[in-house]
Each structure stands twice: as structure tokens, then as C-alpha cells.
Image: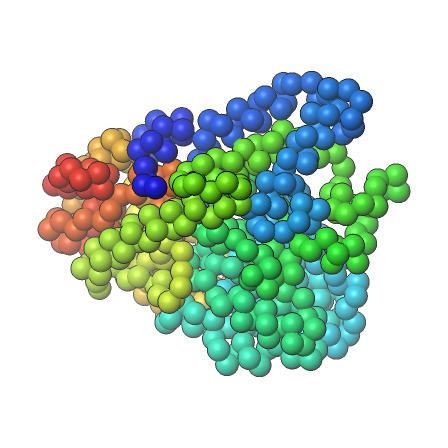
Length: 464
Ligand SMILES: Cc1ncc(COP(=O)(O)O)c(C=O)c1O
């Protein structure tokens, strides 16, 4: 089955705005089907969950449909799917519940590669009960986790290892299965932050060795919420604080208050939409998801390779820091001597959205932002629209030399990693094309060369 980007894009009304979205790790745009599911659920008869009236049954169907969709997406039983407001909230809640079992002398292990949502909740929960914290470092030169600190951090004292499935800053996909194996040898639990991973990857929670796995549907075409997946038998051993009249059932006892039924319906619609991207002949939704997400993966890899080839030509004006052997199409770039924030503003004025910032990947960001660094980092995700981004790229190309980025005087405050995924199925996947003008202007070149026309086989329209 071919991966038809143009057809896919017709489902995304927001792409008509003309903004080229290179902000993948921040979230995706939303297909009509997801918006419609939210509106339909909210405007249909709707009450609290029940079976007696149509409105009660609608609420119930939204919940059961959501659990079944995320069971298919993540490969866990439906009763192991917990809804949350965000992955951050779910991780904080879980950390507090698990910490009740920790004692002084116990340790949790976190990494310096992770988004802060999979670091701070564990560090703070450990501190609250007098448990220790061990760190697995990462090597900025390779963007891989540091093997020595990995093998020494996990010991008989370890109660929990928190590791990312994929870094939203660098794209690195650590060897989660191996890390989980080490943790399990010592009887520790494994919490995997799958927020960035699930946006690019067919997920098999058990295959990863994750005891807990969190993801956020808004990163893969759904509404803003979070999902925790775990073995229901493991959840049944945990007792979060909850209201007395609220059910003791798993997974409901982890979900506080009335559920947002319309959000659940939207999140379900996102899974159905993903399953329909390139389903092949598979009969189950999980198998359709597998086929579709493999097609997305192949598409994104093609784009990443083209982009990397173009960026390599621009070295040393542009430095690429995403070097892990296994990674998502997410690049962290730096523009030595230049302010990434200024590049962000420059492109945003031309409707190319490629934000600068730490993206809450606080620990890895700190490693790159050391005072001696000459780097400003940036990157993008080619989800620009098919026609308008050509015009944006043309605008960048023609105005860039007259409007150069200010050079960094004080390096540290100006250091702003500016990263994003290279592609998403909603995007048309602009390939990189290096022009002479873009080479001359150094860091600007990568954005100038982002041409949708090239991707669709037409000549580059706007590069000069
Ligand atoms: C890797 C990663 N983990 C966790 C989070 C936090 O997710 P949420 O916004 O659902 O709390 C993000 C958000 O960008 C992320 O990229």
C-alpha cells in the first residue's frame, strides 16, 4: 500500500492556513474525523456512565471505545488503559502511589536524556520518602545513553527505572527492552515515557518490557490528554487516593472525577484514523495499526535521510546533534554563533513554524547549554502544506540575505535548542534541497531548502 501524503493532508483543515508545521514534538494538527467525534459526542445525548438511557449508554460507549482503541494501539488489555489529563499528570499520580512502597535506602533511576515529565515526578517522590536517586547519563557526542552509568545505576536497591522510549529533543531511542531486562533482574519496575515514541512507532508495551507506559494522543492526531497503559494485575496492586463513593475497579480507580467523554471519543477517533492510513489487508485494528505505523515510519525515515544529506552539506554552519543509531525523525541542530530564537522568529514571520526552546527536555538541554558551548540548536519537522510552504520557502530564500540572524554575543542566554520532528503523516514531508544561496547564508539554508515541490517530484520553485 502506498503512502499517499496528498490524500492524507485533505483530512486536516488546519493545514489550509498556509503554515508549514515543523513543530512535531509539540503536537500534531487534528484531522476532521477527530474534531467531529468530539463534537458529535458532546452534542449527542450525554450523561454520566450507565446503561439505562441513551445518554448514559453514550457516555459508557465513549469510555469502553477509548479503552479498546488504546488497548489496540499499545498492545495491552483494555482494563489496563487509564485516561489522564496529560502524561505529566499521570506520571505524577503514579509516582506518588508507587513511592508509598519505597523506604530510605531504596533508589529510583532516571536518565539525563528524558523529558522532565519522566524525571521530576520520580525525583520529587523519592525525596518525599527519603529514597535515593541515581542517574543514567547520556553522551552529547553520540546522543546515546552512557553505558557505564547505565550498568552501575541499576542495582539491588533499585525500585523503579524511568526511561524514555524516545527523546523529544534528540530523537534517540534507547534500548528500552535491554534496560527493562536489567531492571527486572533486580525486581525493579520500569516506567517508559512513550510520549514521543508513540508518535512515530508501532508500540508493543510488553515487548518493550515496560511495566508502565505513558503517551499523549495530541502527539499523534488526537486531542489533548494522556494515557497510561499497564498490566491490570499490576494496577490492581496499587491504591491511589480516591473519593469514597468512587469505584474500586481497575482502571477506574486511577481516574479521578467525571471523565471527559468527548475527549475520549476524539482520542479513539485518532486511533481509528491512524489505523486507516495504510492498513493493507489486515483484519484487526491492531494489525491495521501495525501496517499503517510501519508505513509512517518508512515515510519519515525517507524524509530524515534526505534532510540529513542536505544538512551535511552545510556543515560547519549547521551542526546536527542527533546521532543515535536508532532514533525518530527528530533533529537537534545548532547554528554556531547564531541565535536559534532569532531563526525561530524569522521563520515564523514567514509562516514556517519551527520553535526554539528546551521543550521541557530539561536535563539534555542543560548538557548542550554548558557555558563553553558555541552552539545554538534548532531543527524542524516538514509538515508544511503542499503549496503554501513553497511560497514560505521562497520568502525565506529571497529575504534571508537582507535579514541575517544576529550573531550570538553572549552565548549562554541565546542558546535555544530548536528541534522538532521531520515528518508526520499529516505532513507532505518537504525534502531538503541545498541551494548556493542557502550554503552562503549558513544556518538559514536548511529552512530555505525545504521545498514541497521537490517532494512531489516537481522542480524546486522558490529557492532563489
Ligand atoms: C517525551 C515527552 N514526554 C512527556 C511529555 C509531556 O506530555 P504531556 O504534555 O502529555 O504531559 C512530552 C511533551 O511534550 C514529551 O515530548
